[in-house]
Length: 69
Image (cartoon, rainbow, N blue to C red; front, side):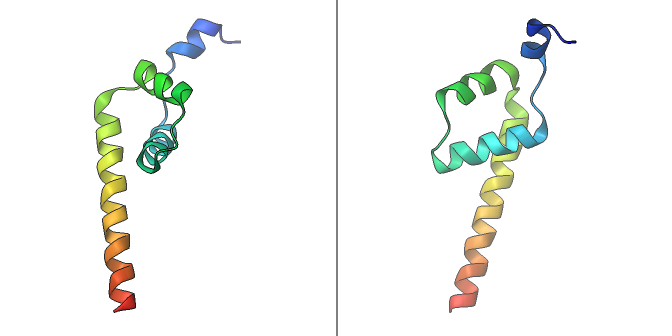
């Protein structure tokens, strides 16, 4: 069984980081999750996930516009 301090030191998974970036992208990130991200996460995985989300968003907009026009 993990101690409480061991749980707090565990790093975020890629899925958790991606979900956190998506929440922040749409403006629904909670203060609790924000503090978790700053204490458990490193900067570069969040930057990479953020770039990925922005690229997917732009590509989605391009596809939607191409389909409509």
